[in-house]
Length: 524
Image (cartoon, rainbow, N blue to C red; front, side, top):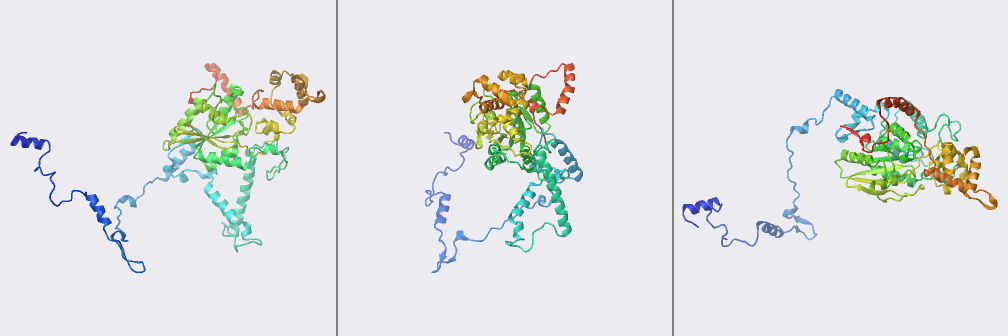
């Protein structure tokens, strides 16, 4: 160490300037306690409140003061100005643009929380229903019934009405009657009642209520427990996947559930998945996908752990939905639909292992189940639900695979409908029984098949019911080819476009599994 100017420069350069007394303690200073420790001890040594003989506080302690500190709001002009302002012309233009894009099932409206949706939605079309208002009206009726004002148990002198005069009450009654008539017509439409079947249906034409009795087995999938499970899945899901049977998409379509999601939960995304597309011709599956895509995004799928189809498209679509909901840690995808349509099989295909129990019989899934697909996507399995329909006969319900064949009484009576839905060449190819041998007689067909397969009862009588159950199971499990043709307008459109594609050299070879055909375009 140097002395003089060099030493002073070194100390200044190294930041050691001072008198060298920084670490020297002054006599009498308390160096065992820090300032924070001293403050804590001062609080502990502060005397508490003083009380009188009755125990009441006569003098409060320092920390028991009830005087609130004076609070001030920062003066700013933004407290007195409009935050978001839009003109009527701009709002009308935005409303028109939203109305046009809403009709496109492949468009999604983003940032709905920052938009005045009550002003954007066009309620003149009558498509938007105020669910909160309907719920309040329902609660009011349930809480204050008619018997609360009239009858021996009346508790009120005046009835609670929304009308203020007799004329207003008459107008309200007329509106309610018109709404009831529209509701009945809508229920008939949801039940897929056709004009040809109105005369033959065993139902009341005025109220649309079913009047004939059915076996209890045909009410499976309609219990309150099943509907509770369905609504649990819908409420917990951000994306709802409606699984349809590619052989009968319209028959396995739950229109009442679609209506509920459209009116009560429009923020949820609904997607159609045509499962079991390997059981129908490729052209038929393509026409059904084209037809259903006008309503909601539709994909073709074949559930299999080893040889699946459409898996890449579905995962790509789910990833797109997770990107749309980037503000959430994860999204939930619920699978709903008719029993035995393959909801659990699709989940197993996506996970590449058996995480859900599956069986070729309906009703295997009893309760909902959460499955993690990846970090940001969870899947929810749901029991199959069967919406009650007036147009569906017992034969339709059975042939859709809703009920178990072994629990049906006299299954041979449904073989005639099975023969109408299939072609004779497929029956001949499956059972080696020609049409000329039974001449469209279901009993004769079952007798021939029972004798060929050796299924006989005592005395050499054919086991009609046993063979009928076998044929029905083969029909449901895909051993007998059958499918429902797509709407005629789509068939005509394909027939018109086919020559053009042939001239251009384009041929349809199947579905692209790259996900490009199911991409969802977003609109801010």
